[in-house]
Image (cartoon, rainbow, N blue to C red):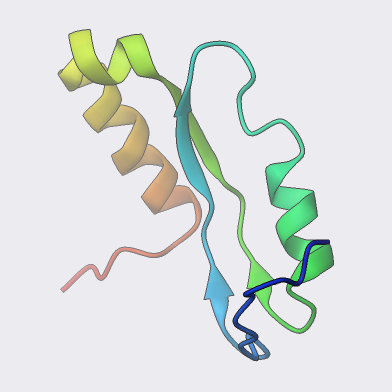
Length: 78
């Protein structure tokens, strides 16, 4: 890891929720890399959406995001 000009923060006890758009690679190994680097943090299941879906099928993207947020139990039901 390149540590030049890096800012170090303790993420112990914090929650990290990875998400991205892509055109074929998905999350790749991003979620596991985050978990490896951010020891002590709770890394939840990430979301990946094709960029073309996010741009051209916004209803589909909204459904995917909403379903994902329900799955990781991050939405407040109140």
